[in-house]
Length: 365
Image (cartoon, rainbow, N blue to C red):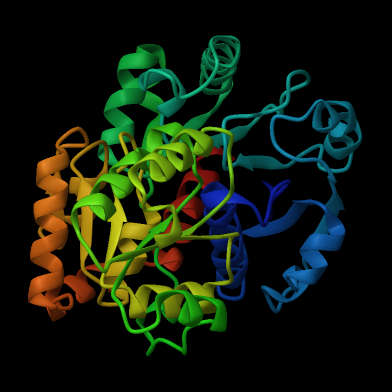
């Protein structure tokens, strides 16, 4: 039996956390029919218990408490104890922030994208310097490097040509619940939008998400509201100031990250998803919106054309006129996603992702 340790230090926050949690749950579920692996989940025990992680499989799962977030010195200080309890395991790190010392002899790391390195202003220069060296070290010592898209694979091969032969693609998935009928909108959203259409944006409010584009759309399209779901970052204050200057701040509703059920409700009721990002490794909200039948207006950057295909209106991330025209056209048509687009997303499952990961871990072992 192959012992596998799964890094779940951050099971609740951000898109990467959702990917890590979904892959871990799907991998655990397949253990019922795959006797090759023995799985240990490493993360904050209290949060994992709240997620009912011990019951993700009918087989017993071990949990090793690793109660520290990503990019955290505390994670490094507690790593020795975690590694001692998983000494012979093949590790899977769903993010490039692998430990600074005593790396596992066998590990697989996932690099979603190189946004911090490729997009000007995506982070401070000192953080960019650290990220570049951290990523390079993570992929150099990995037995295999996993990426979610061909776009990420190309970027990583240019950044780290010495690792090109180790790169494997595992597309992300869409939870089956997003294909179900959407529940009712949360009361706070109903109160905000009334009977007016709203565009939806899902994701953290970092600079590379290019959320200034939403302000430009609001300033040119009357009677439209904008609901944003995701984590606050200091970069947002520039967009907020832009909205105040443009006189549209009262047409924005900011929401903290919501449950999948509430996201389904928001996707289902939105006139369209606005996703003008300058760089993405996959673009999970785009796939989820399409699964819910929601029209998508997004940029043509990174992996987004690869994920959306013909199921979204793609615009240059700097072309304000194109985004405004796409918003107006989508509002006027009131069309939902055609059946082939929804079926395209149905083929993207976390079960398939977990099967690919199982093959890689077995090969590494």
